[in-house]
Length: 171
Image 1: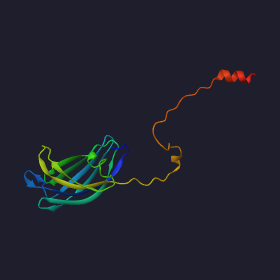
Image 2 (image 1 turned 135 degrees about the horizontal axis):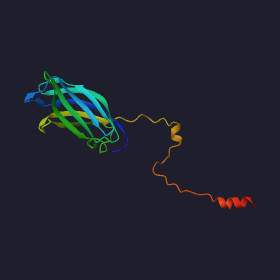
Image 3 (image 1 turned 30 degrees about the vertical axis):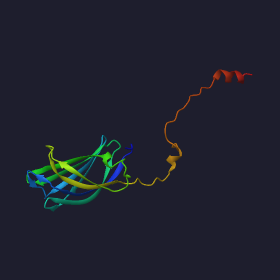
Image 4 (image 1 turned 90 degrees about the horizontal axis):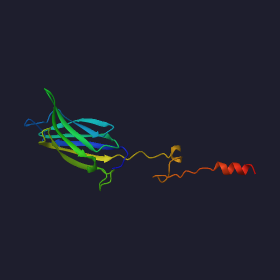
């Protein structure tokens, strides 16, 4: 994975087979998407609509992925009379869709199994993701000082011999 941060176009599509205590979770369901990194966390929230165990979001948002991010987390939750309940979570390695055989700017459709906090399977979440192309570089003045090839530069110190120059000026 490259060392630069990236912006992902993330579309939460749908979920199916969600349950809370054995009952279908089909009302007041929402998802929180996070791109985990050492420096920052990006959070986006989407509320689902649907019934019969199949939920639909079709909500697109941008997620900033820091240079040190290694995974994304999708948490599906449900609002109940007693507050928010966790339905399931999926932790997705960024290497699953970054730096692989598919070019990053291509749209990829993925589905992941959700697990509850006890580790039991609890539904599936479907989403699409692609890397947003960086804005075109304007080639401003800061490029004049930047090395054209990049990489490491090695310098060799050169000392001027003051004794030989001073003796020549006296002649």
